Structures are given as C-alpha cells and as structure tokens.
Length: 203
Length: 82
Image (cartoon, rainbow over all chains, first blue to last red; front, side, top):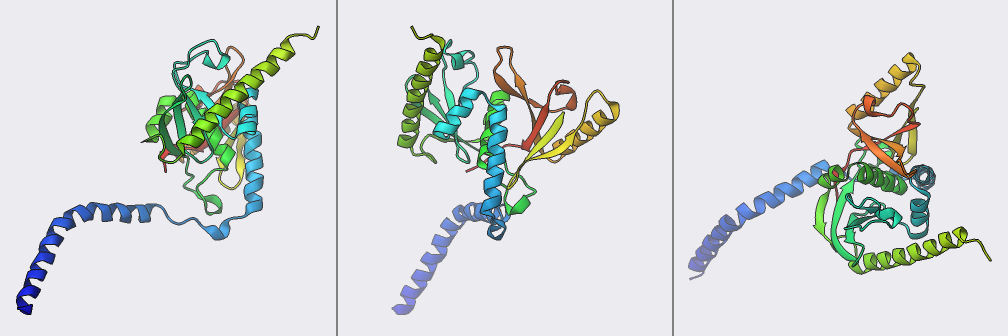
C-alpha cells in the first residue's frame, strides 16, 4: 500500500512539475537577467562628503539653468513642476494647462491634472552613467532633476517614451503627492501675492 | 563655449572649453562633443525663449548648437527605471 501511495505521489509530483515548469522558466530567466545586468552598488566607494559636495555643485548648476521661479519652487518644496506640452502660456497664467508633471529627485515623474489634482501616471526614468565613477551610476539628486527638466522641456515625447509607465501610486504615495500639489497651490498663491505687492506701490 | 558633463559622485565636469569663432578651438569642441555622444550621452543647451524664460534644447549634432551658446550640458541618456 505504501509503495502504491509512493508511486502515486511521485507521478503527481512529476505531473505538477510539467505544468508549473513552463511558467517558472521565464520568471527565472528574468531574475537571472536582472542579476546579471545590475551589479550591486559598490558601497565601499561611497563617501558622504564627496556626495554632499557633488550635490552642492548640482544645485548650483540647476539654479543657473532653470527660471528663478522654478528654483524657488525646488528650494522651498523639493520638487519642480513642468507644464505638459501643448500648454503654452500656462506657466504665466495665460493658458489652460491640460496636464503637468512633478519632477522629484530619483523618483518617478508624476503626471497630473492641475485643475482637479487628479493623478494620471508615473514615469520611471533614470540617467544611469555606465562608467560608474565612484562605483555608482546615480547622478547627484539635483543633476537628476535638471536632466529630467531639460529633457521634458526640450523633448517631452522622447523622455516619456524612454520611461516605464505605471499607474499613479506604484512608487509614490498618492496622498503624499496630493499633499505636494496642495502645497504647490498654496505656494503659487503666496508667490502671486508677493509679486502683486511688489508691482503695486504702497499708497 | 563650455562643454560640461554631469557625473555621479562629482556634479558637472568641464569636458572642453573654447571659442567657436577660432577654427582650431571649434574643431576641438566638435571632437569633444562627438566623443560624448558616442559614449551615449544626451546633449542639452540652456537657452532663453523669446519671452525671456529659461528653456533647454536637446541637440544631436554640433551644428544644432547655437553659435552664441555658453554651455552644452551632457548627461547619460534616459532609460526606463524603477
């Protein structure tokens, strides 16, 4: 009886393996490819002082390239807003922007509808330096922001087509992004009032 | 004109500098420009729009760089991440 059960068990195991193996093979191949392509970061080469100096240089470069308003936004809020293509004039408040992007350092770009704060999607994009100076492929955070800003401003389609598209909420916490959008709206209002005050001479 | 490249762990690095109106320096700039593109970099030129706002242009050839551009910034080409 035990022999019969053993044989039945063996047959069941072989049949199960036949069914499962074809499904597991591509998954295993993907994992193997990922492990082969993405070597581990060289932690021993990490120097916090050097990274801090690199980030200071990157912030200076970012400031020299973006508009004063954009720089103030990044300095105050930690992210940049870029209006979507086809929303010319929206940045000056003269047009209707159908959508906009939020650029975060080393996080996906978020597309959203400014009028409703509805989140549209996340675009995961990196700028990996294959030379890996100092063991890392990652640009300083503000260089990452500047690269995204320049690419979005200059050729939105090219950047978006390079990115991996995900539904909103995959990497970013949607509530945190909505809070950022609300903070941005308050920041816009405050800035507008300040600009208005400087334009209107005191009585 | 200065050619700058973003580098991990460093920030921007000066690749080349020269005057495009001087033939020899222009040739050196073109060679450095092509070398960066051959390494897979994207090249962006910070520019001013007609209304005075700062913008950027992606260029694929040195001929596309405005003659009066002060900087060309190279950064690694975008790749899907996350």
